[in-house]
Length: 104
Image 1 (tube, rainbow, N blue to C red):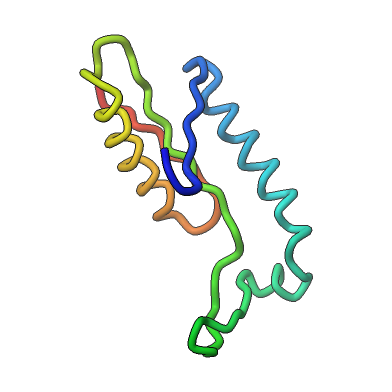
Image 2 (cartoon, rainbow, N blue to C red; image 1 turned 90 degrees about the horizontal axis):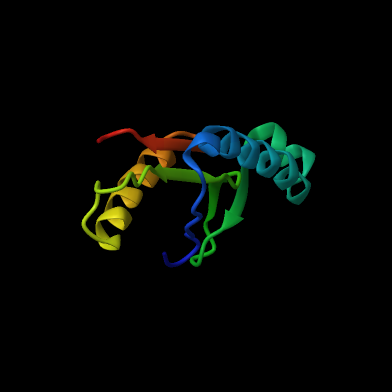
């Protein structure tokens, strides 16, 4: 999709379980990249380009799920648009999360 986004095509009946598994695995393993102090605070402190210390949340993962039932979309661009909307919804939650577009 671009940047650090990607697409995975999976069967709908395993979607929620797979999302939960991915997030649990990510959240467990990402901890090794932070100090105990960072984990306790829930953020890191880093100097920005101007040398000013800023606080940034710990790395998280956001998953947007689009159910592309047959006939729902006219083209791949429509799927991408809905995917961006759903990903935005997932990113609005603090920490790792997923959101599923349930519109028909």
